[in-house]
Image 1 (cartoon, one colour):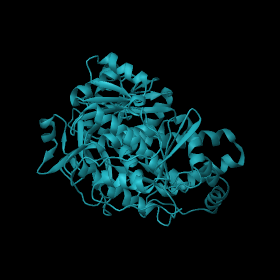
Image 2 (tube, one colour):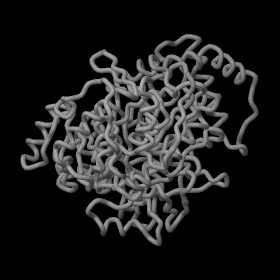
Image 3 (tube, one colour):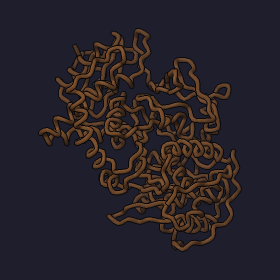
Image 4 (cartoon, helix red, strand yellow):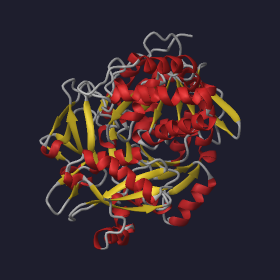
Length: 569
């Protein structure tokens, strides 16, 4: 079967419905629940959408009303999302694992006319936290009249480029989540860009794309990949249990997967640990070849050493006997690339997968830029960078190296927050709050967040992320590293995970000499319990809540400056 094509109408909503109709007998979505696989065709998806649309019409909602969608990923989530959009409503996807109090705050902000829940437990939790909240409906009620027999969908409610299509709430690293309003025009432009970039990746393929997906659809980047897959006519497999992700990678043999850095780091560490336990010649070959490959690729041309015959031997053996086996066992037989977003990926991890023969393509963007500003070009990847700006948008550096963006991908407004909206725009440019650098090849490097800057008492401004990443790289067993030091005389660090004091000291001794004096970390505190969504120190998509961490560890931070407990040499 050849890869499906689509003819764009210039409206992403109509394009997706047209593509599903063309694939009425072709599988486009599949999921596994309780060890049973369910696969549906384009026509069956449209049948589900028609049933959901009938429910919405009978419920009396009107174009422009908001509808909340609170559920785990699944075929019904996709159908509900498409039905809400087709009726001219604004979909508000919510994270099923977020604290009920945070979800209630979002609902009070956007005031949805209806809230659709995937399970009774979710429905009960919301009703308990917000008794006076919106009318709440279970999926089984929404789809009660459905069958998988094709049925006609009514005409789509007119949706034009400037019309809102969704409100996606930001992760709220500062404690306040804002609703980002994205329009049909934003999404239509972005889907054209993602499809074009995937065309480059899949060049030469004569079959349907196979995509494995595990990230919640309520996040902007994840949702854009879902819509891109529907538009491209791909077969999108939804992993609903991360514990089965490794098995699903082997079983589904996808062409590409969207990832977050934490998972790729975990995969790399997992292989290292397995190979170390194996021992013997394979383990020796793996470790030595890896050291050679990373040593060569991470050296600059100025300090690169001449290769020895032994180095070539270890790499040759690994490329024949070890790396192909790891790649097939861990990533499946067809993988063309791993796509990575949400945060910068460590260069060493990106090179590690390149060593296995799998490029990692980085993406940079925010919810406010319809998830994407830059995307790696598969034909030319610079490790450690996030690629060039996507077609049709402008990017430049402002004060303090802040990345500014202008173009059709930039959001319309924050819902009900005109003052917040005006704060992030100046002369038509959106201020991302991210610090960046631009290379001669027009590829972007993301340095860190401006609001995360640590400003010492000396006046030095320090982006913490690069130092945190390097310390984490040096610390086996560590889960997170967070720097402190605002208004202080030096930097200190909070380290989480199974780390001994001697290990932490050794990591500082390795990192500090390469840093200027004001960037050196002089003290540390170790917490065995990692930061998590459950303890309120990570956002729903895994980002650090730095203000909450500083408050939670207020006494420990004070100790590092008053008594200098854990002071690094």
